[in-house]
Length: 236
Length: 236
DNA sequence: CGCTTTGTTGAACGGGTTCAATTCGCGTGG
DNA sequence: CCACGCGAATTGAACCCGTTCAACAAAGCG
Image (tube, rainbow over the protein chains, first blue to last red):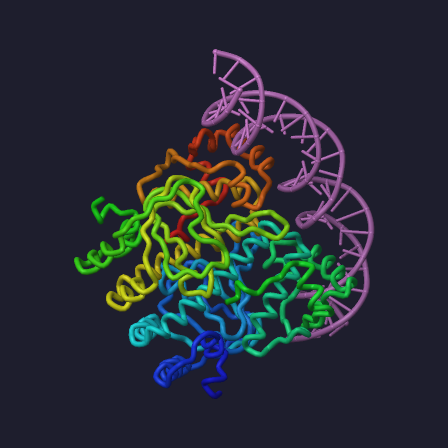
């Protein structure tokens, strides 16, 4: 793959132009790609990591399991996303990450990463900017779980995912391929899968969006955006 | 104030020992402290910031207002916390921050911060570690809003706040001073203030914790921790 | 072919909200 | 000094969004 088409470069480069030197540093991070089948564990809660991953192809989920047995998905990761960067700087990972589909990642050790940061401060700033976006996504989901009803949560999440996938050319205003099940949607949005099912039906019947057969289709993008007050500014 | 007693140094130094040089860099960040009365806005959603703040004394709240008028508090900040660091690297702040009490902060420009990071990589790592903890707090709250009931959310949040305040010597296992109202607790935990009130009464009657007169008292710390499965590992 | 995973629908229940009213403490002005 | 207003806490009652339990259909897969 041509380096400039890498989803990582596309994400980091959303706001700045890279120099030749910066490109070469990024290129080094693309060596040694690794593949995982669906359902693989990249790392788990409490694990001490000395490396992080770039997600190049495929989808992953970051989640926590509660003692009572229920589960909260913290984030869904798509190509261009960072996996486990926090746990490099923290003592240990505070959640688990598994692949949802066939997945291609590039592993980067803490050392390589910190060296790159020292060497090219602009690159460090680009990374910090992207980390900020990740946290903004987390904040926006917190708002959803705290103050939005089921319909708003679902629409918001699927619109957000669409916006993120557009960055890496995997979605349009028409919709996108989506490997998530209704159960996973429930664990992301703090709802039961039964209720997810009912609300999805209602959204479909209203002609707003269709979540079916591994595809999300925006049947009326503008009305959907308007009806849940979706705003992309937080995505950077 | 002696620099080594600064809540910022106490937080950053939770895991590493600073050199003389690193101390001097941190000391420079303590110049020009600013004071704010309760209810001041440090910055608001959408604002473009070129500087961030360390919270030295007092409490603050970070929140988002929804178009429907309801509010979600993203985090409560206590001495030693960072305010607005993300918005330095992102395009704009994605939430607003106001003081809850009389407050003392130190302002640090993006430039000074980035220079410090280049100059002393260990300091940069300490900051990244602390940012990680902030994000872990966010993740844990997401889990609360998604999968815990009102009693668990309240207990978890007040225990977490206690653990954070212990780091800066402002709490013990007995309890701590807390300027939050029941309304604010509601906006943090995605509940109504009426329900907060009822659950607080129930917790008090069970002899687990008392939230009254600006104080949180852990009437039976161990039983409280056990009954909601509180675990501090995510706090780093 | 049976088994598991995912999706679908109905009915009853319940945790938490909403609306409404009351109390208490406190600062402010008459 | 008291009346007033205001924000925070408190309590009751009705309601409702979302859960839980239960049953069944459809699709994929060894």
